[in-house]
Structure formats: structure tokens, C-alpha cells
Length: 119
Image 1 (cartoon, rainbow, N blue to C red):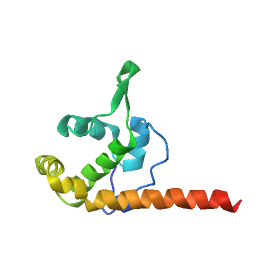
Image 2: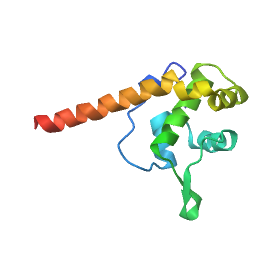
Image 3: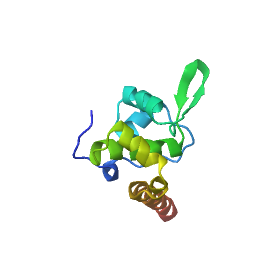
Image 4: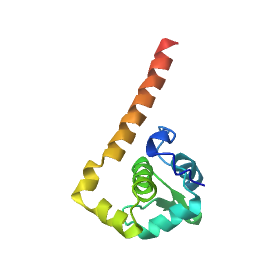
């Protein structure tokens, strides 16, 4: 389940691939798959691609959105309605949590490139 003391900054880096399964997103965001399916109904911004057999494939922006939703609900104490309202406002575009996550991801990718170059 979710450890309330863990923050978005403690989550693993998002791998550099295009699509993620619900299981991978569950691990990356530390949220159970059934919670992700529920959030899809509650947050119109969350729309994973559905392919054969109605399987969900999330993209990087979906993973970042899920992490932002997780932060609003679990760390900042918003209700579902409050989080939905927060995400639909202009301030959502400038959300500090999402910016920090992007910086962390870029740093991780740059460190990987550095390791490759050192070989």
C-alpha cells in the first residue's frame, strides 16, 4: 500500500520509454492498480490509451499526472473534488511538485548518460 511518509520525491525515476502498463505505473507511483482505475473515472485529465482487450497503456505525462494527483490527495490532504478543482485551475500548470519530479527525472537520465560516456 502507500506509506504516508513517502513523498513524490521518494518515488522511482520514470524510465525513458513511451508506454507503461498499469502494473508498471502502479510501481512507479506507489498506488494500487484499482486506485488508478478509479482515478481515471474521477479525473478527466487522466486518459490512458486503451488497446486490444481494453488494456491500458499510460504515457509519461499520465505518470506525471498520477504523481501530481497522489501528492494532492495523500500529501497535501485534498479531497477528490478539491484535487480535481486544483488540477483544472491555472495553478496546476505551474505545480511545483510536477516541476521537481521533472527535474529529478532529467537529472537521473543525465547521470545515466554520464555513466555511459565514462565507459
